[in-house]
Length: 441
Image (tube, rainbow, N blue to C red):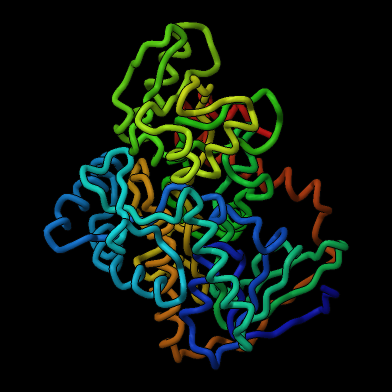
């Protein structure tokens, strides 16, 4: 995109994952919406979500689902956020189905619910082992057809335009280094987490927490920035780059973990942080940097049909997960903390919203329950869209001055952003930082 000094729109959304796209589709069609994304449109962590999306199966499951979420989060969750997410789940799933999302069904044509770690009941819908890809691709396909939505790739947010705690827009830079300003009535941050700052992560490397760094620079409230989830089972490799995740749902279908002696050492269906700690202890015990996973409850044909993406990735490394011991190791996976919001995505700055992994309304507590991430993104993105649609308030018209020549180059900017974020994490939890954040990119 050739950047001009100013582009004006009604709403600018930063990020093209599930949260950003669903917010755009839930906004009125008479609103001009501009979605920018740092890399290509499909290079978002939503595409990588394998396991599924949770849903309240029936009213009798509410208390169980609520307790499972709270327990996984060590009861540090915001109960109101958890309640809203669960109560909104059936409506969101129905909307996805109406939009064309294809969830797996059983022989009778009913939803094929599965179970993952820390869930006591089967309440997770899935599309093979590429649920995030199915949902994101469907939303993206529809967004591209909407006349009021413009999608621009290879464009990076480098600053927020604000004055007197009111957000007026963003400064961004295109792939050619051209800078410009986007002025909007409302701004939605949906930039994902911070995996790109870690040496070992399941995230795309360009997901580097830009929204968090800018929040720190502009005095926007953050919450629980040291609450970072380490996924217990990623495919072990000495190669550099993004780690391939072996989904929680594989353990939900009967996969077990083995140590160097081939011994099972933990209950695989405990919350992720508990399983991760068990793996770390086992690695220390044997002086190794991995353990093993195997799926004895399925044969090769069954596994390739239920988990085609995972089965193929393991085979590419020379392992049949149903017969062999596949080496796995923990890696950074998900951000429970983030830009502090209420249950409608509002941040501490006026006309600035945050959704998805970027936001923290306390729904996950200290540890996210498996397959709540896609649901959370959808539920609270829609609520933010509804609030924005109904907001008829006027902004002050005195736009702050913007000096595009004052911004540093990309390398200097990235170093500054990373230092801001890592210093914040270290200040909140030095023990976590010393254990995991010394494995930084």
